[in-house]
Length: 158
Image 1 (cartoon, helix red, strand yellow):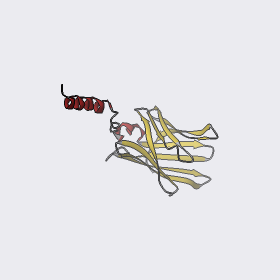
Image 2 (cartoon, helix red, strand yellow):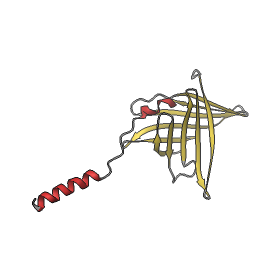
Image 3 (cartoon, rainbow, N blue to C red):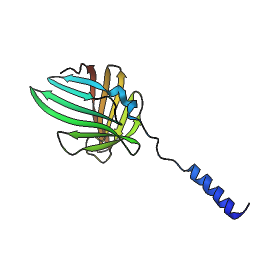
Image 4 (cartoon, rainbow, N blue to C red):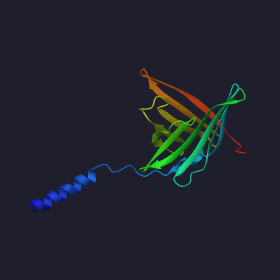
């Protein structure tokens, strides 16, 4: 075998052994998040709504009301960016922050942005068809701190 053939064959094996791009993830896998969700805690009510996947994205919003006034609101998106899902949060009209997906399944979606102050990690877990828990967390002073938001499915009507 000539040197040229050996080099070409060696390069072909080397290139084949390189890790490829991550597989393209379809946002439809997160369709279980679609719908209207609610958490009631004391005198505070949080509603989170997600539209069904379409056009490679999911669009959502969150609103927290307490004492008869809106306390917080957030525009949310899950989009496909360069073959990877990303959760994009825009709380109270501030600049959007992206959290790339690190894991998705039929019952779990985890997004992380370690450079963000709080949260650095956002995770949604499907407990049942009518119950999910969202966990937001961050590492501060070497300790993970966070909170769980347990939500039940509610009617989307007004």
